[in-house]
Amino acid sequence: MINYEIIGSRIRQKRLEKKLTQERLAECLSISGEYMSKIENGRVNVSLKRLAELSLILECPIEYLISGSVTQAPDYKANEFTKLLEGLSSKEKDVVLKITKLITSLKK
Image (cartoon, rainbow, N blue to C red; front, top):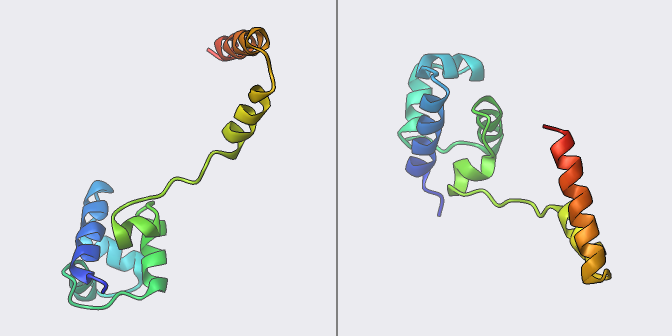
């Protein structure tokens, strides 16, 4: 069951973090301030489309608004790099590590 009060609370929290008033957020969504208040208080069922709009404006994943958590996508490049290292000897891994540290230090 979807708990719209919790979703509304998360929306309010993100709005405050962005230093937006309820009225300003309502304007961005082309809705009334009264309706925005109802969303934040969980008195209306928020559509997926509206949640998507809110997530863009509030710059947070829609997943956070719905569930309160965000699942990180796996870092495929890191996984690929790890697989490449598996076939190397300890000495070769040390060389790769030194080269990586050198490249990183050049960026500073």
